[in-house]
Length: 91
Image 1 (cartoon, rainbow, N blue to C red):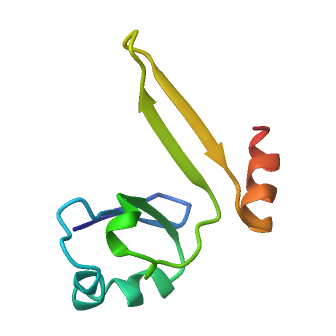
Image 2 (tube, rainbow, N blue to C red):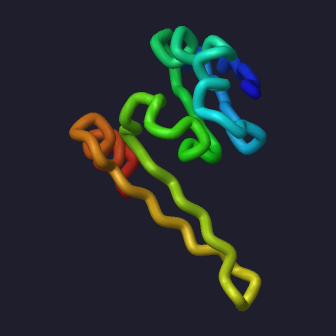
């Protein structure tokens, strides 16, 4: 599933939710390769469901529920582009 969003002055944003994928080939069958190749920001939930078919992420965000009801947020930048973005954001 993909939900497109448009910002007034920014890039196109595509939010992908792979939760219901049962087979990585569904990613190909849905035409997501073309969408990921297009310019814009891509946000992917449950990327492991696409089993290595996705391009490498520039940023990885992990949110975990804690026992006390709070959430722990971890942001990683596995690429140089991601590291530059984190630096620009002051994170």
